[in-house]
Structures are given as structure tokens and as C-alpha cells.
Image 1 (cartoon, rainbow, N blue to C red):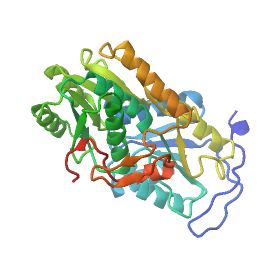
Image 2: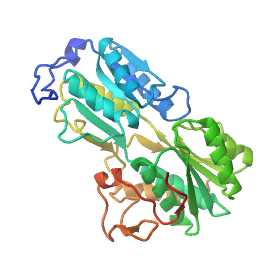
Image 3: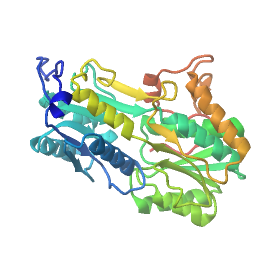
Image 4: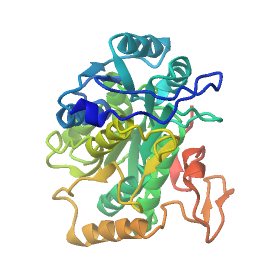
Length: 365
């Protein structure tokens, strides 16, 4: 079975640009790196479940995992360790691993490195690819649920770091909310950490004191913020992983990962010797329009009315038809034009977003 799967790879480029044809992945091991814990009810749990889907799909290939690996040089050390243990396909699954993922790919042209969420440096490497989803599409839909549910018109958003994905998520959430409730505003507060429950709790309480009645988040671990919202009797929006069991009364909806199908197809592409020059050899982004977004919306909770659910569905249909949450005209919160009228920004432009739209309050660290 392995012999039939592990066809010859077309080529792989070293850091010096020398081609290494004839690579075989017979009997390879597959290595995953996680920045947090496998049971964080969030980013790492979703990625861990994706690794389990890979293990199930390829039972003859051993899956190696390293969790709680920080976004420092320790990530490069961990990848080198996985390679020494026989891994020839690596999934460094955190945004902050990109620098070390690129270095490892350059040192090891015989290894395929698949980075989660980053952008490949130019010129690209034949053994490096990045992947992600158009996360902001279901987050926009979740914003619709929040905008319809709020009675104070004050939405709270607990974010980690001011990176492009965060700007896109906060903006999409706010635009979705204001599409059904123009008076709604989002106050964003940063924790400067992917998973620090104490800071999350403090920030969430500060937002409650401002009068927010919906809490959303862009954090790796999601339990704390959901618990704070549920205890306060306000609405909550989930992220990364379905957390409805933590907040059964206040849960509106969640925007979550379903990594399994994409992870399995990535591995199959490598085993079939078709990675170099494939859609995954570069910056791959699944989306609603292409029908393969790894980021999806959960079923709405009991707090979402039928009318609001219909608006959420309609927004999804627009995105599947090629529209974008950021279609112009779009101005930042200082009044500057970011997207002209009639223009849909490219994925590359959205991946470089570094501003907040009108309707977002809060300082950027």
C-alpha cells in the first residue's frame, strides 16, 4: 500500500536553488507542532483533531506530535527533532512558527513543510507551502448574529495580537454586526498572548464593565471567555472549536475549524509526488467561493431567531457567489479609503490587513 502511495516527488529546491529530483516518501512519518494544548477547546484542539484525521486516513504512517511548543527558536529545535525521528512531512501549526519553518525547509529539501496561516517568502521554495481559510467569512456571519442579539449596541472582542488575521476578524465581525444593526460598535482589547486564562478573564470583565452584552474572541483557548459571558448572562460567540457546551444559554454561534479534509488532502498530495507546482506549493487559501473553506460556521444557538438565521445564510450565499465582507467602498476608522467602491480586495490584500474599520473602538498595542 505504501509503495503505491509514495510515488516519486517531482523536485525540491535547496536553499542554494539546487534541484533534488527523485524524492520518495515511502514509510515516512508525519510531524505536527502545536503551540498550545490538545484540549484547549480552541485553535490547538481543532488542529489536533485534524492530525487525528490524518492518522486515521493513513494508518500505515506514524503521526508524531509535539504540543506546547513556543513561537521561538524552540520551534526550529522541535522540527529538527521530528525530522531525526523520521518525519518527512511537517505541519507547524502556529502563525509564529513561520520563521523557523522557512529555515527548516531551506536546510532540509527532502522534507515538505506545511505552515498554517503564514505567507511564503519570495522566491518560494518547492518544499514549503502555507495554508489557511477565509476565516473572516464565517466570522462576518457570526457578527450578524451578534448585531441582531445586542440590546446595548456594545460588542466586546478579546484579541491576542495585532496581526493581519486579527484585523480581518475584528473588521468582519463588526461589518457583519453593522449590516443588521448600524448602531452596533465593537470594542477590541488585546491580551498579548494566545492563551492566558487570567488575562482573558480580566479583559473580559473590563469589557463587561463597559456595558457589552456580546463577547467574541480571537484566542487559542476559548473556555474562559465563554464562561465569563455565561456567568454574566450575556451572549457569546465561539471561535476555533464548538464551545456551546460551555455556554449553553448565551451561545449564539461559532466560527470553527474543520481541518481534517484539508490535512488529509495535503498529505495525499505529497505521497502522490504532486506537491511541487501544486496549488498547495505556495499560499493556499480555501474559501466559500471555491467550496473548500476549512473554517465553517456551527449551527446557531437558541438565541438566534429564524429571521437572523436567514440573514446569516444569505451572507454565506453572497460569499459563495464571489462577494467579500470587505467589498468596497471600505474606509478605515480614521476615514481613509482602503477599498474603492466596486472593488473586491484580493486574498493577498486581505492577508496584509493592518487597520480597523469604522465601528471598531480600542487601542492597538
